[in-house]
Length: 172
Image 1 (cartoon, one colour):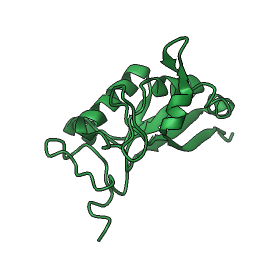
Image 2 (spheres, rainbow, N blue to C red):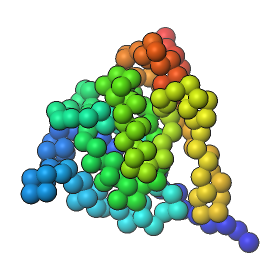
Image 3 (tube, one colour):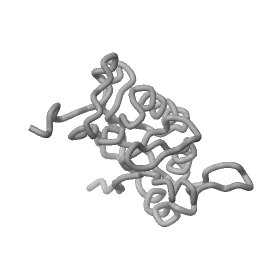
Image 4 (cartoon, rainbow, N blue to C red):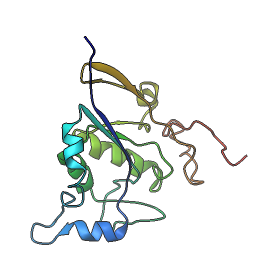
């Protein structure tokens, strides 16, 4: 008998400063993204697996920042988890916006939130194992995360394994 599963894959999750400011709930002193993500929630919750590209860092703050060097509140990760997302792709052109420390802290926050991630690494061992195989409604699916580059930001010298790049020099 055929196995049918639902995989939801969303594009970029980023928090430009107008979005960050809009998410601020002064009464509770938290950034609440639930209203902003409300339209996506039924799709993410109904899926066997929901995936999005985390196109920002969670480097700590305030201050937070939008384009060109993103740094969003940790509450964004909680909002994604509450919306129903299961896995985040972290290799993209903004993953090093706040350097190697920002990349590492982002992964720490995702781990603390219970969000699986793929595409960036804190250690060589993590890079060597940088694939996620998940059961998606009875079907094993392997997830890989790669990016074309990091907006000209070089890999940290002490972290040459930090980002899955499929092309080391995409300009030439």
